[in-house]
Image (cartoon, rainbow, N blue to C red; front, top):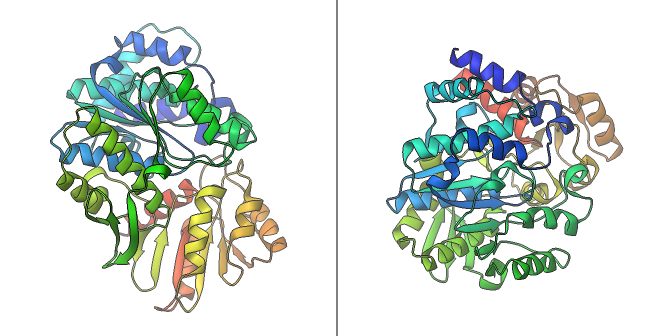
Length: 431
């Protein structure tokens, strides 16, 4: 089997959420546990930090991984989805899993005689990550949940620390239609006796986390009650954070949401240090300053060009877009031009309500099966007072926005992880 055959198997012979949505969501850990057992339980070979939440969990996971790397540990990182290359999901010390290992793992799975229920894409890739981390001999693995927490495939692990970033309305068809219900699913990663850091709460969600941690006798640290960030300002293209216990930190990630994410990360570092993990202040500052280079993180208020200022971001729900739209409304530019598209299972009404009405819009759609058709989007947007033209591809919308722009304009591209993926694929081909 070639690597191309292997990728075809993973994306076309298993259930892939980004392609088909609901049919690929398989609540329960039985299949994951069965595949894990086939590979002799690789999750037991390393210490893990388990991260859930609606927004910010990817940035938080990458940051914690970078901090552990800079502290001298060998670190595995498992995140999703990817933007350009499947192998982005599984990294060790920032380097993607080798193509040969992906092929070898799938070959071993296919020859294992497994005859249980059909494995989903996420179930199989989760155990691939664990198997690879064991193969590489990692000291720590930072694991991002895919969807939810309680029934997420990653939840077979017994971590040394759990982190829950925040709760917002997203994937309500699976996780529940209130913040409390969603928090209950995310709180499912809280394990007996294992410390947990919670980044942000609301009146609805805080009691859920407090009750779950009490029931599990798990020490809980609410980051909001231990605010590390004294002040934050943009300086020389970075977010300069003045902190209580870690000095001055220049954060490479400059989106508004990164202030809250930084506080969550610093609280997680405090907990890790209390568990005996040796982490220096220098490791922390180096990691914040160079997280993208060290871990391969992309798509978080990512600057594509300077003139016109061109930014993309993977934020895709009401919680994430609230930060983004606030930043867009404060942007100082001649004309704000927005390339935007969504997937079909998002509640876009609330997002469109937040979008700036004085921008010029380029409506489009991501190149996946779950796409929200551009015709549907432009109809809804027009009803909200947002106007522009529709384009069948992200590339077409992006190029049209560039053609229309002056150097003093600003371009924003987003609405979905898959919109950003299509954009970055276009730029990569050009480069």
